[in-house]
Length: 460
Image (cartoon, rainbow, N blue to C red):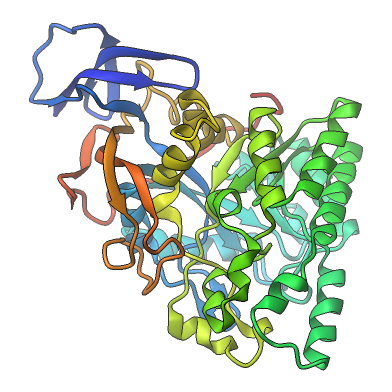
């Protein structure tokens, strides 16, 4: 099927102009002013924005955690993504300690096969790096197209690796052109504070926040950057939340080191005041926790200074019944919140319309930079002839409110309930197929494809 998108304001990470886009099959065939061509379907995008489909490189779908599973599976999670203008996600494959990376990959393929509505890929989370695991790295990068390896500096006994394992993994991944990403918080410090508060019977969600002070993230971010500098591996910090961590990355630039950094919408817009709501605060229990307003200001500045390249979500929803597992003890509240569907509309409304970022920066943060960093550009993340026709037609004037009553997450509350945003994803194309139009989903589970990724680059 051919589709002609006419009269739109086309916005990319590099340009902003009026024009038309011709889509044939799964790819963009032509871009120009007033294209004189015939098409099976014509979409008039006058007075609307046209930009690349979003890429959220940080989601957790059907993930086992704290005795339960995140409530969005591959079908519901990728459906929510499409309604929010995100046409590709990268999920995390979690290795079980004592088992191989290939075993973990088989498990996640079963979770995703025939279920995804948008395109997807995987990061491999390495929780048990040893001689056997090391031998799997080359094949994952070169044959499977999984080029990024997630590490945890927290969650001892389940996910955390020590510095010896971290350096070993970095050296092996670097040899084959991959990247090491990290959850950078000091797990030992956090565990100490959790036990301290529990012994003092301080068990409300507020103490989840107080058990992870800024220094735990700043220290771990600096240590990770040092290890990455020593091994010369391409490095990426996920869900950065605070000024202290950002300063650690800024200092790394003094030795000409590039450490990629991602923040999430919630850390730009929500703050720790939400932990003063009694047990309702469990809705915002995530790790790292929400921070202070000064941290929001630092992150917005970091974006415009080029220190933060990506805005994701760390989408990891749990229903209220699941959150209630920790009603008597904050340390038993499953960590995570729903946000995948709202990332692009919130960032446009609160970022672009409030002059915090430009439109082209918005596109870079939501699509292009992730595509470049994670080895998918120019197939993904841009509007160019030959690229996949992942396209969002966006009405920048539509006002609407976020609510659990209308979102598509499989979650019975919203972290942004009642939040009014300006701007709506009206039509979304996935590889040339109309996926969302008139608030209806037009693709079936299994439409989404696994995307193999190339080796990564240190420069974007």
